[in-house]
Every structure is written in structure tokens, then in C-alpha cells.
Image 1: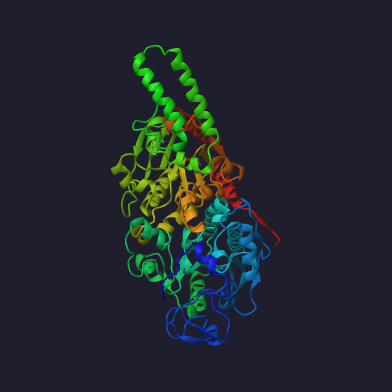
Image 2 (image 1 turned 135 degrees about the horizontal axis):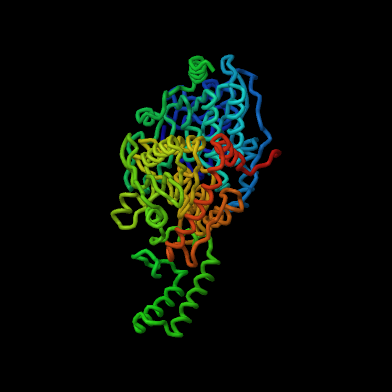
Length: 284
Length: 326
């Protein structure tokens, strides 16, 4: 892939729009951002939004991910109507309340996560899928609450939990409320663990900040899609702090595998079968 | 001033009127030669108190952040000196090394034996560098958890003091799993079966703060800050640039002061600071912190472990602000 996007709010400024470099543009043909190959859009979609030439894993929305991951028509959403409040009346260059409305219009979603139950190769699971196209998949109160409800549902019903992360981190516009979602989701995972439940965490490009430093890194088994950006601090912040260039391949899935923080790098085409396999081994 | 930690330097512009009065006091005191203060001196003392309390009662969010970062503000090891007895420091995470940015050890506070865990920024330049100005590495968070496990085993309550701009953002900290270290602490602290009380004594920067702050009771000192990101970090991203103009705007928007966090239900108490801030009277600050900790531990010690852990879960479980309908 080319220059990696910074996992910050700046990306979120451009990511949700249809004209974004990152999103798949409308039209019959599209260009792979990594290798520049011109691709037939339909074929790319059939290939799970992976470039047939260079294997670049393009970013997918929450809905696309659910379609790719679950058995057809098996998804039953939970808490679909939960939507963000603006507890601090946060205003930066733009009001948070306006950002919410804009993101909702662009994506047709209420916030940056889809949760519910469904089946993967016939196995019932609880899923939570973060959606980068909604304010960079950032975790505010809604993402925290929906993920926590999903974890609690998995705990109470003895179901395996699969969370697919794709997020710039905690949502700054909810400040302390966002921060505490890290504790809330992690505490819920402690209860799932106490109950002997299985949690498979899937890290996709990008997974950074407060999402990485809470539920995303707490999987019993952690998968990562190839070449995803995964980290705590963003590369730019690190570069500014140490005032040195970052090593080649720093904070990629492969880097984390070598460092011992990811179990397996899983190609998108194999995600369903790899998840099923772990569920079978766990006996969940 | 007599109680202040040596090396006190007034660095904040909004304190200039106070610095001026203090200069006059110092000049007079040298004349009087330590004998009974003259009327003039007494007036100056009174003026100083008035100006101090007036200045400090009207601090902006950004000024509060600067007080929280004051170089002479008491740090974890100062509280150890001022409110703990028989401190027995315990080093190392048994995996990688010993991170001086998080201090851990057994201590006695009032009637309690506790495990103390706290960020340490360092005061001298070499100390500050080795503590990375209070930005802990993964081994710091892992050390904290390891010692908390020992406390749990021996039924010793845990006291944590938070004072960090954030967890360290570096190549090695990423390589050693900064995110994983913090995440594991969040999960494990939520189910530790002994009382945990936390005081944010200075800076409460993001996950690096929360990584030792999943507690039954959380207090902030009056001029501490606690937020999802530092004002500069927020300004750099949302205002595109962190500078003298945008940092105060970000600080205000983040609702990071003790009073705002209390009002939003994110912390349980605000501990009042001495007039003019903790750095002006560390001794009386430590006394207030100690009193609060002892009171909380007395209350929490009455709960059985199941109730304690359930209530801690509920405390964080209920935080959030959202609409059930779009």
C-alpha cells in the first residue's frame, strides 16, 4: 500500500465522503490505491474489496463487512437506534452536533458501529463491526455502549463474540465520556472471560488509539488483516516525539505479529473459515 | 512559601501580580531580619492571600492545565514522603525491566497498609528524562498490574496516584505492546478483589492515566485535569495546529477540569487545594489527600469482595451519554 493514513481525525474529515481517496468511488471502474491498477468495480466487490493484482485490502464499511462475514440474511441488529448525544456541546472548527448530522447523512448510519447476532458458517455468533466511514470509527458513548451490550449478550447467552475493529481511537468530542468507554468495554470483557466465553478480535486498517488500548487488544485470539495499520499512538505523533524516521513496516499487522501481539494474519477471503475454526476449537 | 518544595519557580504569567507581592515581602523580611513582622508586612501577607485566592478561583481551563504541570507541584514520591510511612518500593515487571515513570510499593497511610501505585514525572532534569516526564512504557503498566495482583493476594487495598500527560508514544513502546499493556490493566483492574482508590494529582492524560485508574473511587485535585487527550493533542488534530491560540480553546472544549469531570459524573470527588495551588503548600495538600483516601478505604473495607467488584463494574458500566432514538 502507499503512504499510510494517519489514524486521526484528519482522516475522518475526508474518509466518509464519496470522493475520498480511501473510499471506493462510484462508477464502473476504479483504481487500486496501492498499485494503481484500474479495476472493474463489480469484480473488486465480488473479491471482498481486495485488489486482484496486489492483494491490497481496501477499507470496507460496517454493512459491507457484515455482508462479507456473516451467512446471508442472518444478521439481526441490536440497539440499531442508539445515536450520539453531544454531552459537552463540543465545538472545534465545526460543532460536533453538525459533524454527527453530516456523518449520519453520508453513511445512513446512526453511529460508527454495527452490533447484533448472526451466523458464520452455521455457527451463531455475536458481532460488533466498527465503521471507519462514520467519524473515523471513533469510540464515543454509542460505540462503547453498543460494544458493551454485545459483550454482555455473548456472556449471558454463551455465544462466541467477534469484534472487527476499524477506528482512529476514542472520540475527542465526548472527551471523558469517550475515555471511560475504554474501561467499560474492557470490564465487560473481564466478565465474558470469567464466564469462559470466546472473544475473537479482528484488527483491520486502521486500528489505533483508545480502541486498540481497550477491547481490540483483549481477544483470546487476535487476527489482523494483512498490512493494516495497528498501534496505540499514531505514526505522526511518534515521529514528532522521537524526531526520527520510523522503521520500515512499523505498526503494520506484520510488525505486530513479529512483536507477539497478533496471533494470525488472515486474508479477508479466509476470515470466515478462520473464525469458524477457532470457534470449533474453543467448543463455544 | 516556607512549605514549598525547593526550586520553586513561578513560571505562569497569570501569577505575575503574586510574584511581585512576594518580591516585596522578601525584601521587607530581609530588613526585619526574621523578627516580628511589621504592620506593612502583615498587610502584604494579607494582600498576597487575597490576590492568590482571587487569581486561583478564576482560572481558565488552560491555566488549570498549566498549574497541573507546575514544576514544583507535588508528585507521587512527594506524597510518599508527606503522607506515607514505611514505604517499601517494589521494582520491575519481571518481563522486561523497571519503568521509573510508574512507582509501586507497599506503604502505610493512616491506619491502612496499602499498595501504592503512581506516575512519577521526576524533578531534576536527569530524573525527568529517565521518567520520560511521567509518560510510562508498557513495562510500567505491567509492573503496576503485577504488584496489584500481590496486593489482591494479601488483601491489601490499592491506592493509585495519576499524573501523566499520556502513555509514551515511541517505537519501542509500540513494539512492546503499549496498547495491550493498558488494555489488560483496564480489564484486570475491573475485577481485582480488593478496594482501589485513585487520586488524579496532576495530569490525567488519556489511556495512560486510565491504565491505573479503574477504581472504586476516583478523586481529582482541584487544579488537576483529566481527559481523553491532552489539549495540545486535541488542538493539533481538531484545530489543525497546537499553538497559544488553539490550546486554550481545546482545553475549554474538553471539559477537563475537576469540577467539570465531577459534574459529568466521571469522577466521585474534588479535593480542594491549598490557596494558590498544591505547589504552594504540599504539606497541607498531602494531608487533604490522605484524609480523603483514609475515608474511602474505611467505607470500602466494609464491602465484601463480590459487592466491591460488582459496584466497580456498575460504576463504569453506567457512564455514557446517548440517545436511544435517532
